[in-house]
Image (cartoon, rainbow, N blue to C red; front, side, top):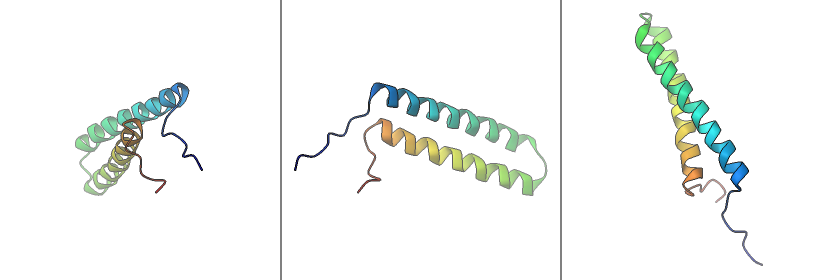
Length: 72
């Protein structure tokens, strides 16, 4: 049986790129606001959310770079 090539369509690539930009922007904004607040518990919460967005960015980059091994 032939194996399906590991390619992404132009439309999918554009959408994944958009998702990366949304997560990257959210991450930057949240890190900024985390540095502005004084309440440590709220700051910790914001840092956790920023870390989540950063992890999403890294995952999307791995897809865009062709390193996605989530199917294995």
